[in-house]
Image 1 (tube, rainbow, N blue to C red):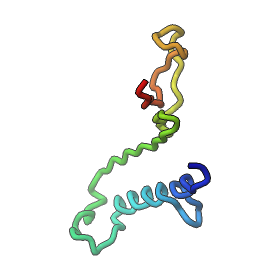
Image 2: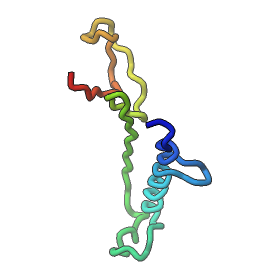
Image 3: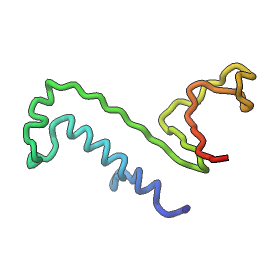
Length: 100
């Protein structure tokens, strides 16, 4: 469906952030120990300066039965005739979903 506000819902604006910026902001607030102190376990971040965090994110799009990794670098062209009729590629960022 077009013009239904999907992009706006996900990204928002600086004045009214969408789901993605709000989720990222909450992740970093949690890491910094700024989460709600009324949480069930108040000690969960009490030593956040002594912890090391690894945050991994994915940003995927499904369009025309193809999954696109929107954070992946563009595919690097492989040698011609390397088993792909489209020129080949290494580190591709698209996966087909078609059942044909």
